[in-house]
Image 1: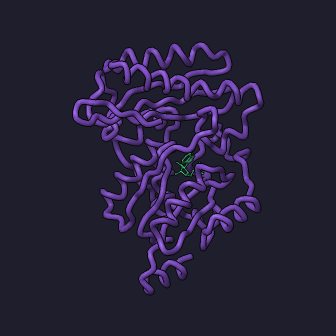
Image 2: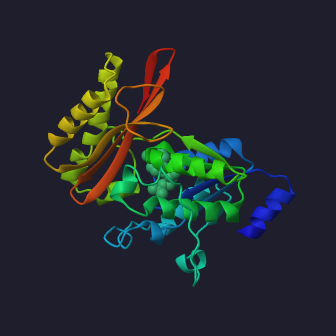
Length: 281
Ligand code: AMP
């Protein structure tokens, strides 16, 4: 991988990089398309990063569909697939970690201590190996994208971090490899995240600016779904990820909800432009 990266740099070919954990879906492939549009060669990675899973989480059962994934990536025009083994990424004696302070402990980080430290570390390692001009991430994992952008800025990384839209199923559910865990009943229940965010979107369009009322309405909506258990519903500033009391500037409405044993996340982007609020699901 290093040789490929060095050669591309030497020949002045730009590389777009799409890091994934595999079990690919249309969300991942949208990142590949974005990478292709802006790069002369595209590299994707598949690495189910063991360190970002807590002992009680789903590392063992995380879906692994390597053969199908590599074919999909090839069909999508990816030039190289980097799929290292855990022992290559974490050789004996590994002890360096990247912690993006202040952003990593909030929201998902509160529910998953150590998760974002492990994500930032593995993304930095991947960027160091692949040396892309641009790396593509999904807004589905918006806190992750925010943390990686901060890391890239703070550590003067030579890769531009590009954040791409959320790709959804026809009924609104954000695509996720973890959706494969849902049984048919849970799959229907899982649309509650989208419906709660869509409710917030409609309220904002009607003039609601009060963050507490918006989050209360999202919590109420989640509570109507018997199979859903709320982890959090928050309205935060998109830069600091701190809770806001009123909409202002760029905000995010974030949801983390357990459907059965499957933890799902989704978010709504809220942007103030000339006094108007634009929302993007
Ligand atoms: P993962 O394989 O879940 O680690 O995701 C790899 C990349 O794909 C991350 O940057 C995710 O944010 C992105 N991604 C996952 N789901 C979606 C989606 N539904 N729409 C857009 N990007 C996504």
